[in-house]
Length: 95
Image (cartoon, rainbow, N blue to C red; front, side, top):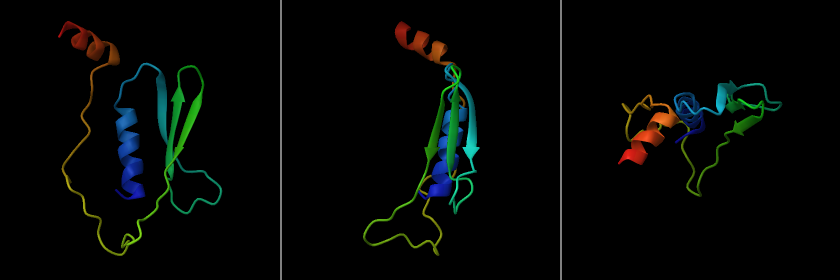
């Protein structure tokens, strides 16, 4: 998974998590020396703490041909909306 798609995937995953401790999820764009915009995700917690997830890229020894289209194994996959964490925990406890 290339960096731009991983950034979008992470953003969607955290945005749709409905976790009670997450207040806000934003794309990280203002980083000195950044050659890619956006370059990560900022997660603001309800207690005011902030987590910045910067996503960088690297390639294996054979490299990744950026000039070629990325192979996406499941192009139609979408992250589903989830129930609240309390609803999921309650349903899990009942089973």
